[in-house]
Length: 315
Length: 315
Image 1 (spheres, rainbow over the protein chains, first blue to last red):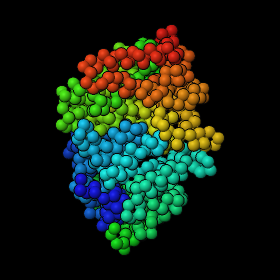
Image 2 (tube, each protein chain N blue to C red):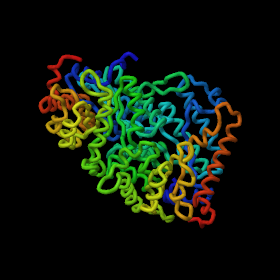
Image 3 (tube, chains in turn brown, orange):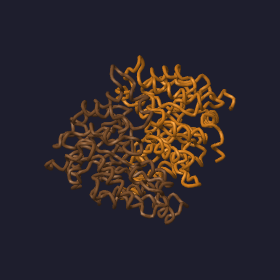
Image 4 (spheres, chains in turn red, orange):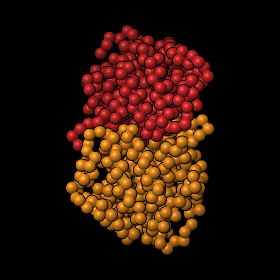
């Protein structure tokens, strides 16, 4: 497809510069937090109706945030919670984001070996290959991937991504309180997550774009600001996808070190803090979503090099 | 549901003893390997038709293996490759296996944090909770889970599983050639996978069944026989799910050490070696599947304590 012609990192950089923004809105629909008006309209009698409610809600959120942010991140788990109907809603949500000229990061944390990893990767990116034909499935711009299985298990994702101008974000330091249990185990003098980060840096250097970042990025939680700064120093060419901003406790100030001086390099995700920035019975919830989005952007512009995006020449 | 009343490890033990068998058949449908007769019947024009072909193929495989084995393992990736229609085929395949009184392990290698992990777990097990109601989704007996995010991210899976008599298999040592890259990193004197195994053993002891195994098992590849033996010695109460038998190179002899003397404790998976034990143009492919299943069972009975299942009293 035409919009896939260029390198993922360059497409992302162009979108960030166009919107002067590094904020990613996480699409994490949860039934009990949806606006009451939407819940009432769809009822809660079947998974299909709940999936339709999620889709409708996400469509409204996309309409609100499309002029403001460059990228959205649907969370596969909340759609999977509605079964096949939920996956159909996920697919249509991804399509709608694409039509709205938003980049999409599918947060699936997928992982498996060999041909099985390839099946996930084809579905995520250019499409599943059956016989001589290719069938688009999720058609996302990027996917989150779990590295525990090792290089040969991650590589099918990388190959599929790079071949079609897509991106992969490998979990390095997750945002949860218990992330340290395995990720901080000291291995040969350095914690495990640094070994994973080294692998990500290698992969990233092998897929370098004009903007100076590779197609293979790292997930690094906003809830671990010291590690964010340490990893930025160690991996200057690795894109960071930063969850945990807002509700999970990561502050804008803590995230500053994750950016390159020109404002690129860090995609900061906020989910609940934006899409559920209201009480379910609030009639003007759309206004609350827009306000929360603008406030998050302002906070990042004030405390991080994101503001420098407006100074940059386009790539 | 009634069939979920007892502990997963006890249900598994009862099924293994009833069938005198520890073999798990992996349901990994791949379009290019399907019997030609099935491909011709369904055509390859849409993802929906391919998904229907997968479902029909899996249904025939289930009919063949149901008298022979206690458990099947659908691989989520190959169904996801067909998008929402594939997920619908996965759901119906799981239902069909359940009606055939086969236990089901959904191989999804899911992982995420907090409420997001819970969304995956509810979908996998008792059902998604929306408002005051519970909606069954995959309704599998067990799920594979990736541990990289740490204890607090794995626990939502464990809680949901244990509360409803289901099981979780945590990736410890995967079967791929590159598994050692991170899993063998030396941390505080022991490789990473041993630290993960220790966590699994803790979780397992907290969910003990009458048969002497817990609800939380470990995935340990047949392709690493030394680690299999080492882990069995270290974790006598942890169920092992063992991929990599057959096509990936793991031999029956290498697997023997993974069993307890009474024949319990190890579920040995074979996928391609059984479901694709023929050339696509072979008209009597069903016979080949049955023969391959019986041969795998015979090989395990000859080389492992599996044969002792027939001596055991039922739990």
